[in-house]
Length: 308
Image (cartoon, rainbow, N blue to C red):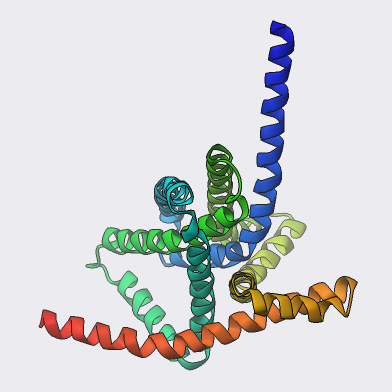
């Protein structure tokens, strides 16, 4: 009997672990859209510091990311347990924020490119001045990156919670914790590799081997394009993921898209649904930017006036 009970316990544990694995994979697929932008944003956040300090800065941001998720995971489980009706509104809010952020990035890219160039030039000039305390610049970058990570982590946790909301609290916590750890390790491991990619390329160009030199020059040529590609893919993914969340939250719209897509069948149906989600995300983001940006500016001006 004892042996049978032990085997039954092992079977139960194996079943739970299998369920957790399956749901973790499902959650990872849904949150993958945020990761491209997460990578690009965090890699950009740590650029501009000295080469010797790049990895310590990435490690500091990674520790802050773990702290963010240590807050967000229990909070998500508590919301699911005490106020489960709040999960869908939070998902919708996260989806809307993704769309807003994506639209804001596009508008900023095409209409405020001069401001971004000026900001980067000012930062580079400041870094060259001997009286500038680089530790202050570094700490500011770390704080900014951790704030960005908190927002993106909240989106990832909310999306993951939407996948496992029907499961027991224990499985919800396990899946959220696994996703949080895997994403943090994966993202910041890749960020560390990305920010040191040019150093690796430079090292190879200084070797005697002609092959190594060619590879090094190739890496130096490829590194900037990698950053741009990650940023573009991340922005597109914001509309696809955010639009998909909004579409799923509005039953009539979701049913209309699915019914229309069913007429194509197979891969075309999936492509139509995906493009439709992206267009909904783009329209929602543009609308939110049009409505919220003036409000944000008014609040900012009032805040500055009150300080003065």
